[in-house]
Length: 286
Image (cartoon, rainbow, N blue to C red; front, side):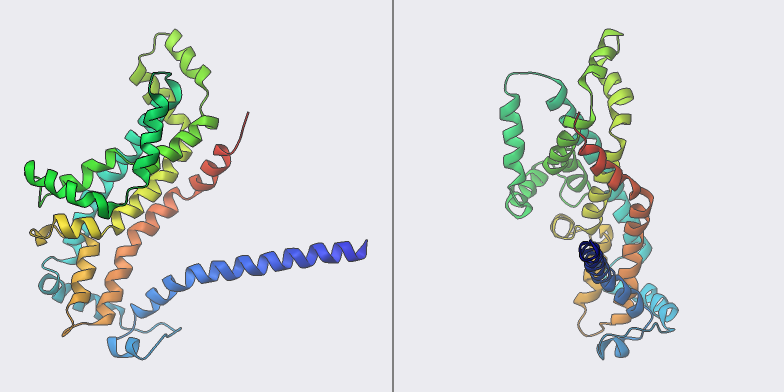
């Protein structure tokens, strides 16, 4: 009896140690980012430092002075540009993915399985493969060098559709939808007033993922906005700082990266409670 209790305690201790180690491993890069943003460039080049310095204000002021020269756009302009792209992208992606999943879950129509298989297939295609077609479409529609090709494709997000459909399979009662129809509710009214509130945890979870993915996106904007540097987003701004080999200041770069991460942390802190709720409710089977 005593041996079994000691074995259980040892397993718990081992699990806690592993969890603490993995947590520290995940937090460590952010800690290094914060520390390096407070150090001068020469100190950063010497190696990893664990104690903060007093150079953050100087790094920030230097960043503001040089950013318009090295990145062709100011820091706050780049932040504003990223928000212009990220906020509508997140809203469109979550709303239309939920609408698509709703249609595949609630409606019984011919070709539904084929449509779901097509969404599965689209998930397998990487961005690098489809970018050539996107550039061609942008050239035909005169959208090259604008934010539209970064925002509108968010309406077709197969990964988000997949997650929302899996959640609806267990978290949305079709009987409620049918009862609303009997009461005379229209289809879009039913979706917006009944289905959407029930999907809040899953939508908040996907909103975090969509926000982070759009905010950190460098590949697509660097191609579609290559001729319009004044429209540069934050990843393009940071890349511009790093590309200047002769005047590269690591203190400025880390200060800029820290400011870049802050909106992501704010979005995560505001919506993180829904991640656990979404996963937990999505796993409940009636």
